[in-house]
Image 1 (cartoon, helix red, strand yellow):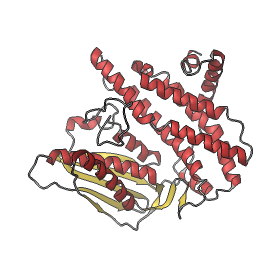
Image 2 (image 1 turned 90 degrees about the horizontal axis):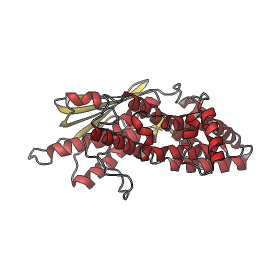
Image 3 (image 1 turned 90 degrees about the vertical axis):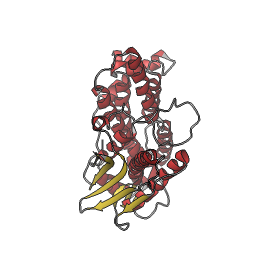
Image 4 (image 1 turned 180 degrees about the vertical axis):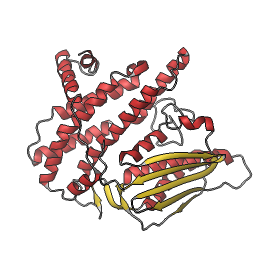
Length: 371
């Protein structure tokens, strides 16, 4: 039970309470989680009656502690001393606080209980908003420590595997909470079920993501390449708009940065970034291409790792929040790929001399169970 003792050390003042919560974390972390398909979320959410919302809350009250406990336990036993980095300890405490809030919430039995539970998990979701940059800071703290010690293990495979599991689980937790909360919207947009848009136009999402990414580029560089989008704006498919926007924003932002930095001191015309949306009967393929120089062959194997970035890292996360930046810790691409994989798709990088290309493949996600 050493892990159970350590998993709450520093998170709670009372030793008996800490021990009791630790035992609960271990017990719930050993339980099997339940996968939920997009089809089920759409069918169930199409009838957001008080009865269905009550059933949804009761499911989350059982399911969320399992998922959160698993991650809290993993955060306690990471290799190379990563678990002891201040940023990782902060994330661990967030998970422990959330486990405690959900696990010790009174049993949801009626409508009033369900509404109170929904407000509580809203706060849990907000608590975890900065998990990605905080985890990134922890990984950088470890990297800098090992660099100073000249003791860098080749590949960091264990850490990469953990981070893939951790972030995929985070996507799932936020999807489940977000879907339940969104089902309480008294006036949802036509075709929208919770977070799921049953008639989402990838071209329209690409346009919105491009505008957002271009605004960041203009803010940081004073100018930005044009973006040309090709595809049928009337084509739609069921997907989570937030996920697609996040992925395309990251991909377009990377392309804009590459082109801007390659041509900022050039007399040549700046070439546009191109986005092509190809719709199939069972899938959607989106290609983002640029003439920003591509990625060196030596960098391709590292592109989806969490320790690789071509940019200077932000100094810390405790300063003023100035919003999104053009580049940072190097987590954008690997996490974008996880979002694609969450509903059965994938993300591929193709690099040629002078050219960069990303292929985002999204499949018919009805029957894919989420993690």
